[in-house]
Length: 282
Image 1 (cartoon, helix red, strand yellow):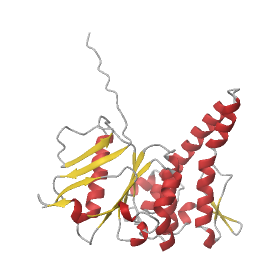
Image 2 (tube, helix red, strand yellow; image 1 turned 30 degrees about the vertical axis):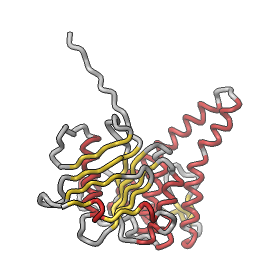
Image 3 (spheres, helix red, strand yellow; image 1 turned 135 degrees about the vertical axis):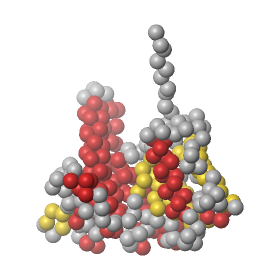
Image 4 (tube, helix red, strand yellow; image 1 turned 90 degrees about the vertical axis):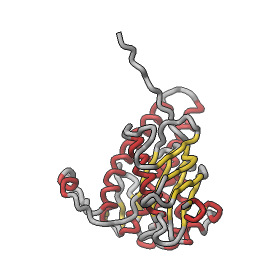
């Protein structure tokens, strides 16, 4: 009888390096050694910052779908920590609030107010947010019914990340008098007695909400968050606080982003910046 071979997958904690054989037409070899916490890629327009982020994200998608070969045709090579890891948890944040052109997507979501790419990200995050609450709820019930005194405190600790998320959202949205509805299982807002769908928010509000929700539902796990110019549509104060807000919601996340905004690094992340010229070879 044939013996079934079980391949155990090991999940990495962070990305150690990204290598791209060529950005364009066999030119511009990229080698980027990454920090485990925050990595900010800077440089002039047209140098390929977004291309580095986007090609890396596509390569991780290939790995997640199990289509990776020993010598990937797309010329992207990603190494994890620890070195024997075979996969990694990651999220890609899109910052452009352009209309959705695929009508088949909209047809699958009857009654939803999905019109733009940020709306689509919010829709999918609402599903993850519901799953997150179910998972946390089940863990709390298990702790409260264990009969152990120390588990009572552990159950209380599990409620803190969601409350922290809600408090941060309320603080950021103070200027427009929006507060997050704390009784709903989905994300809704209250403003002057009216309930507001997240799809009715401004582009900047949707964007910060997408980023914060993503960090929350990662549940403090080692994850990678890739972002291409996340400052688009964000108020300057939100840009300055962005990195620290993400890492407050998930201290174990590795952030990899490219930006044109000096505000992104103003809250203590200047040493996390690397210029395109420093990782580019002819």
